[in-house]
Length: 128
Image 1 (cartoon, helix red, strand yellow):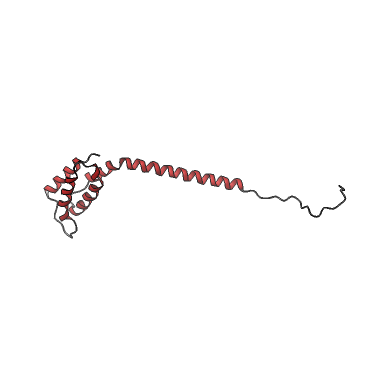
Image 2 (image 1 turned 180 degrees about the vertical axis):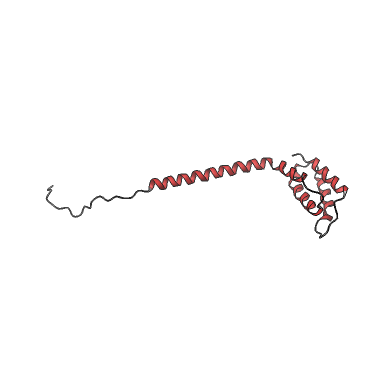
């Protein structure tokens, strides 16, 4: 090869910006954040579902029976959620029938003693 011959078709070296390390780092960081978030939600879900009957039972026990309309709706709602934990579903059906006059009306009377007794019996029959 003769060094005196000019080479016109070969270009000089060009710097190519390489951002692949930043892209890879970003993907790894985002993946770790998503994975940690999913693990946290999974832990909360299983923790909540394990204690849910106890929480619902506490909510059922804390219902204020002085406001009869809201109490009727709340007792029915939480009672249905805890129906599988109850030892006597017939008791719940009787309670719901006793609570029907306290729903769907504009003005309702206060809960009578028999309904409150059924409510307390139903709470005692729940095995949570």
